[in-house]
Length: 467
Image (cartoon, rainbow, N blue to C red; front, side, top):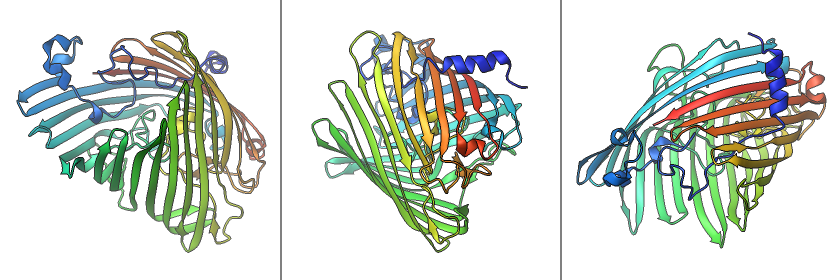
């Protein structure tokens, strides 16, 4: 069903108003200890404070936590999420579809068992993801009923530090999720099969090492998702305080793919990413900047790529909590296809929603610059407008979508991709319920029009209930 004129007008109008960052800051009194809304990993929740009956103030508290013995307890939780999308010219109309409207369903339930004073832990999460009425299918749309997570933790001491070894299917997210994300907004969250070890060195300081395969989503039947053994992902990620409010992440990541096609070359790829993230907050300012270099080989061709991703802001005092921000993202592109060099940056497993939820942009051969302004007219509402000017970093390369697929006809087209107007209205309807209204309008430039594309718009309504 095509988006109505009302939906198209709503997309353009809402883009004048807002796109939300997480609504509740640390220290907020609004159900801070209950499930965060939305998107944080459920395995990170700790409900031992409910041992005190006086703190069981939520109707679900008697179900989400059960003390089994002095050294054992179990936690339960779930999520019901429905999302309705309407897109006008998905992929700018370059893939033969002029409009696409559909409904998505995500149902989740988990159990989290802790034994021997948390020396051993088992976490299992089952989810059902479906999509109804969508014309352009994506692997992140639906997987039927699957084990989304199933892992065992072994916790112990390494000297004076705590060491956690996690084995099994798990989610991962690091830093500002520029390269590794939980991928919450798409219907199927990103998960991996393998091993991860975390050494907690002190407050705000830890080192992670992991070796995993991404989970391959298969919507053919239930319980048929398995490891993608054609892809190996491994790395080290450390977070350390530097001085005062300044902190740093240091990381080295390896991604080995049995066969891929990029920059006119097809074959096995070994791509290594080395980077740092500088972040912190002080006196109302907050900042997060990732600098990443990539090297390796794709079928004998040398990989040399790089990226910068930066989000800086200032939050003013006052009841509205206004935050004025500036986002700058730059990622390298390739100069000439098939010349024995690969210059296109690969963002690995990124959080693409910072540019809007319409799956039209990713951090590859791109320059994105633009302001955001967030504010809360009510403690349970958050608005944040965002406007971004977008160009190719290298005009000789193409335009890339999430998943590193290139839009047809965009190699050697113009450099200007256009201007993105994105918005979100987030309403915390209850202690367990979040409602999001997202929109995006992409006014395209020569990079798209010369390939035959046109402006694209998007409206999404998401309702999430977590317990």
